[in-house]
Image (cartoon, helix red, strand yellow):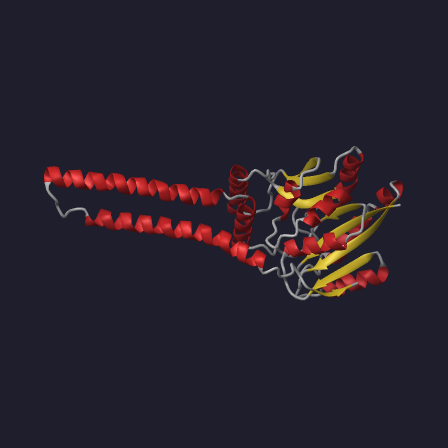
Length: 309
């Protein structure tokens, strides 16, 4: 029998543990028809509620359920990598515990793999239930990163995907500390089939992603897959140098022709503030890349496992 591994990153998802399992098990006929066995990994990313206890209770009923418990919160990216490292399946799926990634799509996704695709990925075509301002910035992010980066990242792409073993091994070979899975999934290549579906709201609880957290995550993605911001900073600096040279000539010629009036100090202050702001922005861009390099060279582990069952 072929083995299907399901990876479910969790952070304070006590209400969704059983719900996800029950929804997944509705596919038992599909598993039997295709001679598929399964293993289910709940990766507890340092939850503060009863997530781990609920997984243990579920494991007592079904030994194919496994728990990976982190020593603290390391983030979803680390949880995905830990799950991929533990998975032994011929096919591996990454899914959210809140049922926003419908397990009912698994049969269709598996069917495309049997047609020769290496991985089947999902993308939302609507953002129903999401704040409009958040949807607006999300679309802006995808346009921006696809403009800057050579790695195409699908608008609305979810982490929910079903992969063959070669794809999983390729992703695991990308062992960088600063991870952006959506970009890594695309960067490794392979033939991908995209499935579109309507946005599904969470079964229970609230999202753990704040607007600021998503903004930082977006910044990580841009820095991880593009050096364009560095080029933009350099070009901006060059343009301001040219502008400064032109203004020097203008001031010099004006002084020769019309004298040297003292008017204009408010505009001078504004120009100084503008140029200073641009300089700080460029230093900040360089600092982001330097910070990521600093984290990489320290070679700290992506996560620490406190308990594994």
